Amino acid sequence: MINPEGRRGLFITIDGIDGAGKTTLSNSVAAVFHKLDPLITKEPTDRNEWGRRLRRTTKEGRLPKDVEIDFFHKDRLDHLENEIKPALSKARIVICDRYVDSTLAYQCDNAEEADLLYEQMSPKILVPNVTFILSCDVQTGLDRIAKRDGFVKNAFETYETLEKARNIFLSRSNQHYIHIDSSQTEDLVFRVTMNCLLKSFDFLSNFMIREFRSEDETNNISTFSTKRAIA
Ligand code: TYD
Image 1 (tube, rainbow, N blue to C red):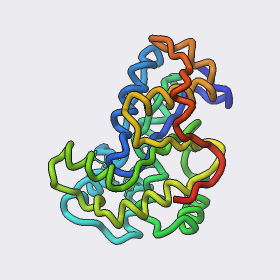
Image 2 (cartoon, protein in one colour):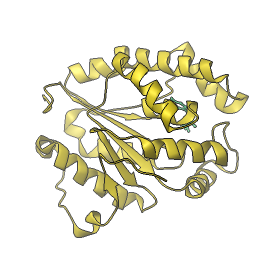
Image 3 (cartoon, rainbow, N blue to C red):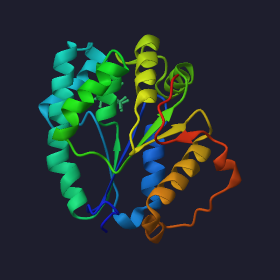
Image 4 (cartoon, rainbow, N blue to C red):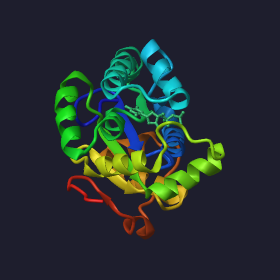
C-alpha cells in the first residue's frame, strides 16, 4: 500500500495526556485495519537502555529535563530505525501510542519552547502521516487513571504536569494534526477518529474489515486540524 504522500505504509501517532484514551483508541483502530497487518507500538519503548531507564522514572522519579529530552529522542530514533520504518517498508499500518508530541508536552515548559524543540527535532525524525491529539480535561484523565491503576500515580501524573502538558498538546498545529475531544465515550471517539481517517485517506476504506458510515452524531464532536486552540 502506497499512501497519498507517496510513502509506503501509513504512520499514525496518537497522543494526549495520561487517561486521554490513547491505548484504547490504538487498539480499536488497529482491529479495523487487520488486513494491513497493523503494528501497535508505544513510547517510551522497552527495546533499549534509554527507553527502559525512562520507564523506570515513572516509579523512581523524574530525570533532569535535558536528560529526559535526550533519552526520549534516542529511544525514538532507535524505535524509528528498527521497528517503525521496517514495518512501513512492508506497507504495514503503524499506530504509535505517544511520539514526539509527548516530548514537547511533558519536557517543555510552554508552547513557544515546544515549537522551538519541534523545529530542532522534526528534521531528524519521521513526521507521521497523521497525529491524533486526544484531549480531555485533566480531572477526567486523572479519574480514568485512578479507575484503571488504583490511586497509585506515576511521576508524570500530577495535576500541574498534566495541565501544562494538556495546554501544549492543544497548541500543536500543523497539517498533520487532528484534535479530538476525548471526554466523550470510547465508542464515539473511535467513530470520530475513523471518520477523520477515512476523510484524509480514502484508500483506507479498501482495507477495513467492516463498514463505517459517517453518522450525524460524529459531526457534533469537536475536531479540528489546522487552527491553533487555546485551552
Ligand atoms: P505511558 O504511556 O503513560 O506509560 P504506561 O503505559 O506505563 O502508562 O508513558 C509514561 C510516561 O512517559 C507518560 O506519563 C508521559 C511520559 N513521556 C514523556 O514525558 N515524554 C515522552 O516523549 C514520552 C513518549 C512519554
